[in-house]
Picture (cartoon, helix red, strand yellow):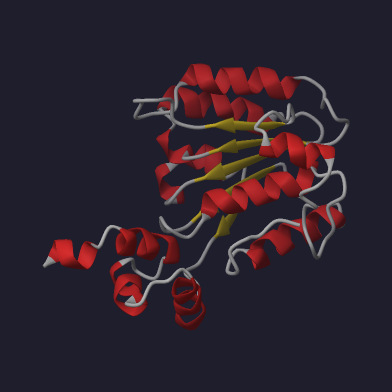
Length: 213
C-alpha cells in the first residue's frame, strides 16, 4: 500500500474499480489546478496497473518485485515522458521513442503504462505523433496525460482520452492536511493558492506572505 494524498484517493479508487470491472479506457487525461497532486495521482494509477498484488481498496502493495522496480525507476513497463533538462516543450522525438516502447509486448505480461506530464507542453508535431498511438493503442496499454488545462491540448487528442478533473478539496480537509505539515497560517496560504494544498504548502515554505509584504 502506498500513501496517497487524501483528496486523491477517491480518484484512484474510481480508476481501480474501472480496472476491476474491465472497463478501463486506454487513455486518461488528468486536469486541474497546479498544486493538487495530479502527477502523484498519475503515478498511483500506474502503480495500480503494474503491481503484482494490488487490491481495489488498498491499491498497490508497495512490496512486490514490480513495486520495487518502480521505486528504483527501472520498471520496463512504466514509461514517463517529461520535459528534458532546459527544454520548454516535449518534442516529437520523445513521442516517437514512446511509441516504439509501447509497440513491444509487456515485459512482465501485464499492463504497459505511459505517463506524459505536462502533456500540454507537447509541441504540435509531438501531439500529432501521439495521436497515432491514441488512435491505435496496443493491447494492455494505458496512457495517462497530465495537464492543468485540457483546452491547451488539441481537440483530436482530448477526444481520445477520458478526462478526469481533479477538483480542489474541501477547505476543512485541506486545512487539516496543511496543519499536519506544520503550517500555522494555513488558511491564508490556502486562499493565496486558490485552494490547492500543495501550492499552499510551497508558498508557506517560501514564506510568500512576508515576500508579498
